[in-house]
Length: 394
Image 1 (cartoon, rainbow, N blue to C red):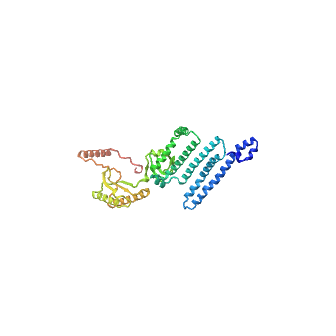
Image 2 (cartoon, helix red, strand yellow):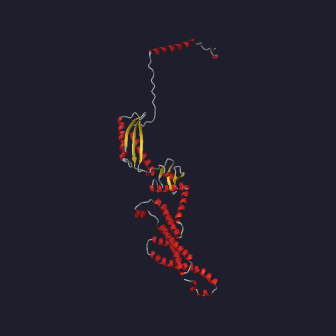
Image 3 (cartoon, rainbow, N blue to C red):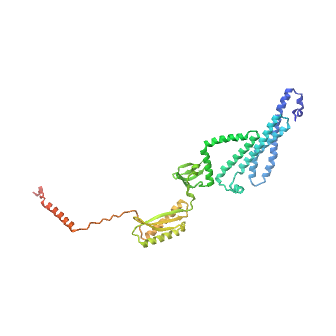
């Protein structure tokens, strides 16, 4: 449509005024139309939808509608630009630019809307398992949600750039070269991120577990994308890169189902056979009837004649995982064992050594030698002069 046909008074103006008007006025009018259509179409589309979602009890549809406001406005602007290009007789170059821009805005609005909707619904374990049949850990969801969100944005950017006549293949190839350089420079960070994914997926430990590796031990306080924080027994906070944890042997004490009670009792050699048999029977019965002790795991046997003791091995599995509860049960069992040993009159042995000294047998030759020695001593005493009298004796 020619602007002179819409505004006849322009035909009476000078040529340069007509040229300026034909160059500027269409853009001004197009901008006004675009803004007006943006307001009108947005209101026409969103108002009935808002009235509809108010009737539902769930707030999900309300949040989805609010998330759709910005993408709808962007789509209306793109549609208005395309519409205006057909209302005015723009140059072919301007029309191509306007149509390309309008289509790019429509594509951007589509992917923008997908991202906003994904932010509302996101990934949830129940929904993900129902759709795919796979179960994902709760801790992995923030990482997966961020990854999916950026994948959608990257896919939308590729479509928009392709619509704007960019060489997407060359751009992706260039980004690939740049990505190789970045990955080489940040390989530790990337390995830590994969380590985080491995920790969350394999689930060797969780926050609150007590773990031990060849280099450290402590309680896990947090598992991050790059590192894991562990509180040691001395209350020092240790930050461990995730790739080191995934490559290390991790012992998780919090995952045990039982704790092992293993002790060797040492009795003195004065213990009789009957006392030993009775002690073994009573200790075995004690453990089999003790609460929180697995009776199938009880082992009580006389195993060794040691250098200073008779050894009895006592083994059992306590159905307790908490360390304090286990030590309390262990204390009660040991006190009961001491009571059994004391009642049977048995003594506990401790490392000791006995030294036996035997005197040599007395013979006639040794007796004669002793008599000769005594006679020589007496002869020396007789030959010694008497002492001079003292002053008081004179």
